[in-house]
Amino acid sequence: MATLVAPDHADPIADAEALRAACEGWGTNEKGIIEIIGHRTAAQLKLIKEAYEEMYSENLIKRFEKELSGNFEKAVYRWMLDPCEREAVLAHDALKKKEFGVIIEISCIPSSDELLAIKRAYQARYKHSLEEDVASHFSGDLRKLLLLLVSVYRYDSYETEVTDPKLVEAEAKILEDCIKDKEYNHDEIIRILTTRSKAHLISTFYRYEDISGTPLVEVLDSDKEFVVALQAAIRCIKCPQEYLEQVLTDALLKHGTDEDALTRVIVTRAEKDLGEIKERFYQRHSKTLEQVVAKETHWDYEPFLLALLGKKDH
Image (cartoon, rainbow, N blue to C red):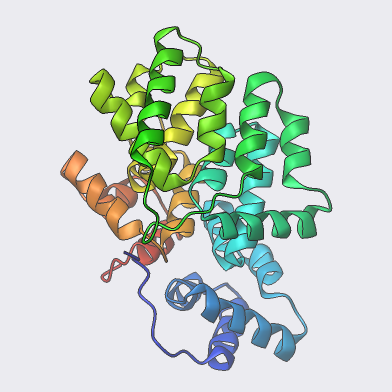
């Protein structure tokens, strides 16, 4: 369930003119910018960018980079990118910081076709492959896991796929045996996690829980990077919305606000499933995501995020 509130029909030429006016004069009209781009879909933004460049011989995103600053500029920059290019930029930024969790999100949450498009966008933008850069930034078992996750093409079809109960049972037992012996980096765990469809894996995770009496991620008992990465991959595959709600909780309610994580979740999910993530956040904390965002963010960054969250009285 998306949170973005956008009109069914928008005039890209009128929007381009209004955005030009918002960037002209003695001061930037940030409110005017938010009123437009905070209520346009990716498809509508693409038309606006094309119209703006044709009319003014100027790249709109680059103009925003000149006019805006801080967390607001960074959030606008990511929002204005085409979705696949946005994910490519997020992956590149994550690699520079060695944030393997973001690489796992990008590998495990999108569909296989979406991941393929992201990798193409990455190659086009940075002139080398995502796999190459993952390999150069990580090592050991963690590199092996990440490379397989970004490389796999899962033939997923949730509506039509019927999982094989015998195979689910067998692989749940393999997981149980490996984990019982604390062989978290066992080739069989990596094989199952990086070759099976998401529907099969979800059935296997639940079957493991039936056998062992404990969810798989809770049994993985280690704070080593590889095990943390395994847990993240399992959570992203099993229930992306639950995983991303945890990302938001950590970003907003731990020590200081993690604006990068907050921006990442909101701009990537506003047109997809941010509504469900918001509901999970409220159920867990008894306060709305909008309330916490308004408390923890400031200046123009705050109303922009609230617009993407669907808040109407910002």
